[in-house]
Image 1 (spheres, one colour):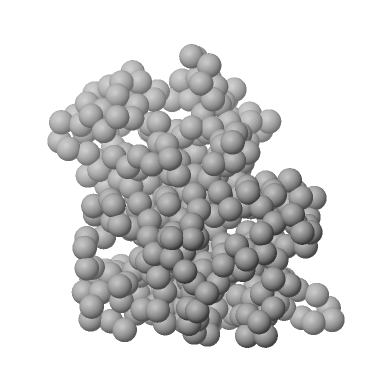
Image 2 (cartoon, rainbow, N blue to C red):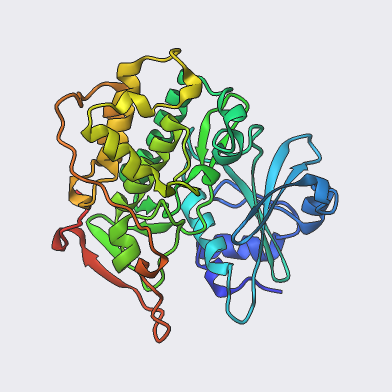
Length: 367
């Protein structure tokens, strides 16, 4: 069986020929990643045994595996419905985004495998799972993350996104930044992962999508409502995640007495009162620099401002986090967040076409 056309478009014609001819021989392509055989992946994961399952995403399962040379890997399995090609676009997007992209704060794509309607992506194995599971799950796990670890994770994520947004050409908009898509290695170094929803865009180009993708609570309002995607959409999601890391609170919480709480709004309220330090995660007690924690919260609020043009670029946010840029007197406008599923842009079922426009043509342009 030959690859479907969308997959072949990821490669040069020479590479596509190599993949088709040797897809079961584990040979590398010019892009630097291997084409694994299904037999090899099956053996590495003990026939995808349930004990090796380490995650479940919107497009498939993730398994831990050990290659014949002893290398530990994570195998992401995507099942494609051949008639609709559901999952095929995500498979192609992830390879296109990561095949030539290398950074210490991005997950490393080792290779891929094709077996019938199944597509597999093989990554380096991350010993400390994802941020959502290792850190944000409950108070007991948060106690293991002191201020230094939280600082390094926050700055590492910012560095990875700044690289995707400003150093890669065409630049990459991730579209689904959240705790579940930030992996942690044995040293708790953060790795931005799961590029199945990413978009590769040229300079000064934004994207208007007929299908909004991402996670409620992290979606930038202009993207959720209109489908207008720019780098500032990722900046918003990063801001929400940063507020989570520093406060230890979920994006949305609910209790019978007070109803639904939204983290962005809660942080904004204490900011207006001048008491940001009170919302820092209480498990840190006093074992952290209060001034730095407040600075990180301000950066988070800057990233979730309602008007995308007021949000900083990721490189600017990074400088604020590292203290290269002062935020003491910075003005922060009111943030916003999507609280109703009915506000989210619904796919136009009559057309799958996308419209491209200059970023400078829009008031929510990525500056």
